[in-house]
Length: 364
Image 1: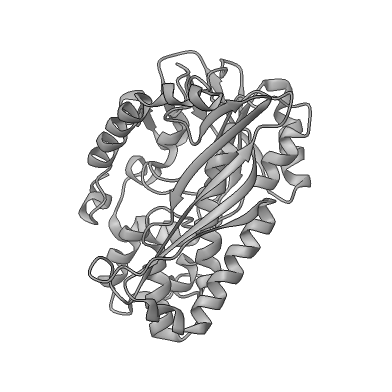
Image 2: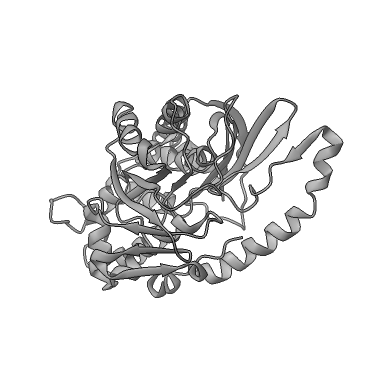
């Protein structure tokens, strides 16, 4: 992912830190027993951490928006249009789309808003939109906004921007087991729910591209939209899909949002199988523009951006059409994109001559 590295995001470094953090964190697992809880094996390194407390199975995760808020800030300065409602939705989506991926329904979301100067909040058009967007995203996710923290950090963050992040607590429904991907098997089908655009991954690369364009954020896309406006389209919130799926008779084998690492994230589970993708979602216009401007080949593009893949559900073959129907009834376009076959861990997209191997994703 050379283009992303040129933008200051090197996953080889970040993933090494994640692996070390997981090792250190695992050394503390025994402390749960003091509170009458236990860790669910296999949940370390998953999209959310899962514990059992008495009869309850709970999932927890912490996520951040990244630098998309910088795009919103620069777009506001350029146009006077606040898109902070949308980036608040993005931030909540980054959190809840992870926590639902272990088969849990969000209960509580907390917020972390950090600025370099508390004066950021005097821009009421921005701050009120931010709060409204956060509330809206929580409501759409079926989760209470449980509070949070809003530090001012002069000398650490610039006064012109805001960093957004937060955490979620979710509940695995009674009678359900956490979805950790360990049950994925040859013959399973891959159901895809498309993305709406950039979502929350690739903003640093997008900012670099915009900085190199004569018209910057005002660069016109083929549809006539401005680049900056298109990049700020909010992420899709997937909790309603997962909630409906968990309320059905379908037993999902694997659930995962396609964010950082793109299609490599298909290999997040420990199952040793090949994921073969024979049908691709439409590529959002703004992502195709970024790929064309950076001259990425398909392998780099699909390992950097979501390229239209928003969320993936792997289910048994008899449940594939039912899963698509559940998604559509909940308001999400969905389709069967491929199948799982026997073989070494990999993701294959034959139509693009793209093959990702398990060694390319080593988060845990």
